[in-house]
Amino acid sequence: MTPLPPQPLSPLDGRYRPAVAPLADYLSEAGLNRARVEVEVEWLIALADRGLFGVAPLGAAEKAGLRALYLEFGQAEIDWLAAREAITRHDVKAVEYLVRDRLDRLGLGALAELTHFACTSEDINSTAYALTVQRAVTRIWLPKLQAVIAALAALATAHRDVPMLARTHGQPATPTTMGKEIGVFAWRLGRVARQIEATEYLAKFSGATGTWSAHLAAEPGVDWPALCRGFIESLGIGFNPVTTQIESHDWQVELYDRIRHAGGILHNLATDAWTYIALGYFAQIPVAGATGSSTMPHKINPIRFENAEANLEIAGGILGTLAQTLVTSRLQRDLTDSTTQRNIGVALGHSLLALDNLQRGLGEIALAEAVLRADLDANWEVLAEAIQTVVRAEIAAGRSRIADPYALLKDLTRGRRVGAEDLAAFVRGLDIGEAARARLLALTPATYTGLASAVVDSI
Image 1 (cartoon, rainbow, N blue to C red):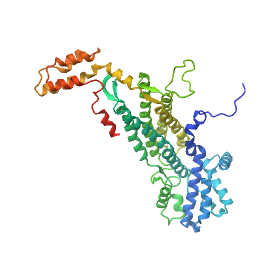
Image 2: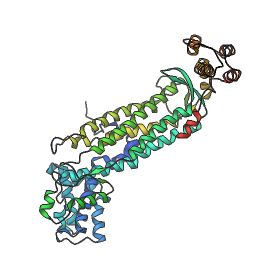
Image 3: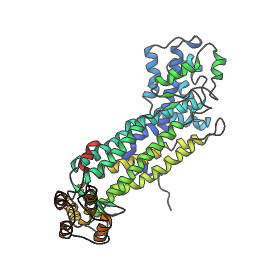
Image 4: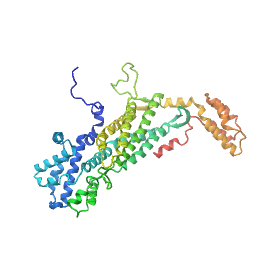
C-alpha cells in the first residue's frame, strides 16, 4: 500500500481546523515559542532600562527593533528554531540562541549576555504559558462561551411565556415554560463564566529553584523579588513569589477545572436539546444542500448537539488529566508538566469546537409550540399537585374536612390518564370553599406554570 502524503493526525488540525484555528496563534508550538521570545526580549529590555551592569537604557528605535522579534514572529523564526533545537535538544535554549542571533543583526550584540539572564527555563515557560493561555481563553474561548450564553438568553426571552410539560425522571411533571428551562442553562453558564473571567494567570521569575540565588550572586544590591514582580506584572499577568523551580500550576488546575465544569453544563445542554428535538418540541431548520441520512431522505439529524456532546467529553477528559497531572511536581522539578502542557490547546480545541457546534445548533432550531400544547393537553393529571395543595390550604383554613388530600389525589391519578372533564368533576365534588374551587376549575396544564416566566428575568 502506498503511504499517504503527510496528513494531520488530529481532526482539530484536519476536518475541524476552521473552527479552532484561532487557538493556534497562542497554543501551538509556534505560539508558545513566540511568547517565549516575547518574555526573553522584554526581560532584556527591563534589565537595560534599569541600567544594570553598566548597560545604558535602550532607545525607542532599539526597543522597537527588539520587539519586532516577537511582533513579527513568522515562518523564518519557526524554521530557525526547529533547526537549532535539533542541535540543542532543548527548546528554551534554542529560543535564547534566536534572540542572541537577532541581537547581532540589530547591532546590539553587546547585550547578548543579558539574554536569558539568571533565568531557568521555567521562568520563561511559566511566563509564556500564562500569557498564551490567558490570551487564548480571554480572546477566543470565553467570547465563544459568551456567544452561546447570549444565544441561550435570547431563546429564553423569546420563549419565556411558552408553557411546556416538565419531565422529572422522564415522567410528566408540573409544567414550566421553555424559556425558563433554557434560561437555567444561561444562568448556570454565566456564573461559571464569571469565575473563569476572574482567573489569576501566574508566573514565576525567581531562578533555578525559586531562590534568586544567581541574581544575588551577580548583583546583591538589587531588590530582585520586587524587580521580577514588577516585570511580570508589566506583562499583564500575576506573580508567584513562592515556588520551586517551577510555578506550581495551581492557577491552571483551577482554570481547567472551571472550564471542565462549564463543559459539563454544556454537555447537559446538548443532551437536553437533543431530547427536546426527539420529543418534537424543537423542529430543525433544514440547511440547503445538507444530507441528514445517506439512505433516509426525510431525516435531519441533530448533529450539532451530538458533535458538541462528544467533543465536550473528549475535552473534559483531557482537562481532567491536565488538572490532575499539573498539581504535582516531584521535589523541586520533574518534566511531567512539560509534555502535559503541550496538550492545553488540544483540550481547549475540542471545547471550542463544541461551543461552535452549540452556537450553530441553537440557531438552527425552531420551537414547535403546537407540539408543546398537545403534550400539555394530554397530561391533565399533572394538576394533581395543585389540587392537593389547595385542599391542604383549605383544611388549614378550616374550610375542608378532607382527611388525606395527597392519598385522595394519588388514588385518582397515579398510573392513569385523567382528562379535563374527569378533573373538573372531581373538583366540583371536593369539600372546599367556592373561591378555591373556582381557581382550580380555571386551571389548565398550560396555565399551571407559576412564576416560570418571571424567573427568566433573573438571568
